[in-house]
Length: 271
Ligand SMILES: [Zn+2]
Image 1 (cartoon, protein in one colour):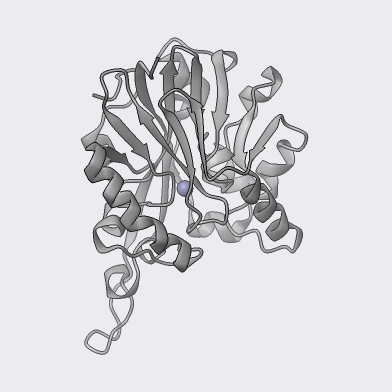
Image 2 (tube, rainbow, N blue to C red):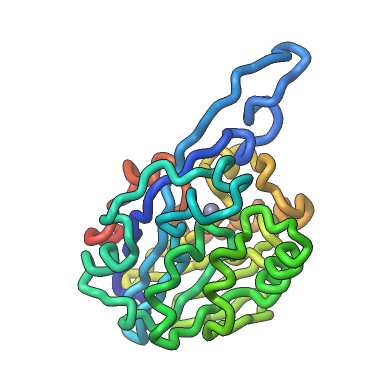
C-alpha cells in the first residue's frame, strides 16, 4: 500500500541574500566586469509535507519558530529573518485544514536540524512520536553548537528537543513505509536527507529539503554560501537528475520562491 495523498503546509516566509543560494555572479558576487553589483534579497516560503499513508501519517519537517526573530541567535535571524508569519502559519492550524491533530502524526522525519525545519515541533512532543533524523545530522548539530558555531542550528530549538523521542538512522536509504524512502544526501549539512514518495497512482515525488533551496541551483548545478560539503553535494546532483528522469519524478523544493504558484497548499492535496 502506498501513500494516498500528499499535502504541503504553509509555515510562513523567510528572507535572505541571494548569495546564500547561488554562487558567483549568479548570486550577485562582484566580477571583473561588474565590481560593485547590487545585492539581491530573496524571500522564500517555509514549508512542511504531510504524507497520508494507509500505515500512518508522516510529517516531513516542521518549520520555523513563530517568535524566532526575538528568541534566536541575532546573527542568524538578521541574515534569515522571519518576514511573514501569522496565526494561520502555525502547524496545528495547517494540520487542522486536513483534519489532523498533532497526535495523529505517526512519524516525524526531519531533513536537517536547521532552525527553519524544527521550529514548530513543540506541539508534537507530548505525544511520543518518533523523530527520524540521520544520526550524522544530530552529531553535526551538537558538535557545532557545542563550539558556539551553530550557524543556522539554534540552541533555542534544540534545547526544547532534549530527550525527545529521537530515532537516529544510519542507513543511506531507508524505506520508512511502502513507497516512502528517506535518502541521505549530505551536501548542505553533514546529515541532510531527502524524502522520495511513490503515491498510490504510481507518481513519484522528491522532497528535497534544503539540498536544493531554489530551482536555479538544480539548473546550474551549483549552490551559494549554503553549500556545506561540495564533493558530497556534487556527488548527488546528477544522481538526482537520473532519478527524476527515470521515474518522471516531481521535485518539490521546500523554499522555492515560486512554490505556491506551482503547487497548492493544504487543504488541497498535491496533484
Ligand atoms: Zn531551510
